[in-house]
Amino acid sequence: MDETLEHIAADVRACRACDLYHSRSQAVPGQGPVDARVIFIGEGPGFHEDQQGVPFVGAAGEFLEELLAMIGLKRREVFIANVIKCRPPGNRDPRPDEIEACSGFLDRQIALIRPLVIVTLGRFSMARYFPHAKISHIHGQPRKIDGILYYPMYHPAAALHQPSLRPKVEEDMARIPDLMARIDEFPDTPPQEQVTQLHLF
Image (tube, rainbow, N blue to C red; front, top):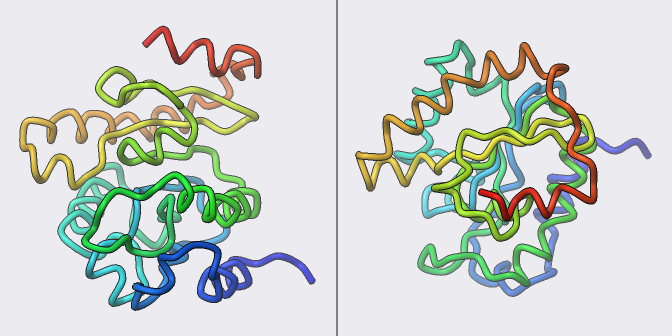
């Protein structure tokens, strides 16, 4: 059977790999087309996402849609997901074992979509590709790994809670069309340098 986003979503909804399935209302597999050129990866579902089964539907989602409109993209043209697919109780931070339990789903979605750019929103999705780095140091600095450009940004919710971050978020978002147009100009980071480079920032 060929893999589809629907198959992955069904597996997410049936998942019992960590304890979060006990408290969730709905799992939130992700949303967007299989031919999306950009994937946005957030942290985890909040209250509204848990109720609706859709990522980024609260205030942060509205801000994300505003940011997309700034660069001529519509929500339906990008794929939006989270590091974890179920809401942690009380919106607490996701735990390492929960992130690990969910990582395979995100790997399968990325392999199927094969985007040009993966935008990490916030420190938990950033840590998946930039371990030990600080978001304040590396936001807006792309790294190309295995043909995909990884682009760390602050989470939209962070800019809502801390208005001083909003210009940085808008500036980083505004660069995405140019990065997509010039993606072939970026050299692939050799595997042995992918970790060591991170400590320079």
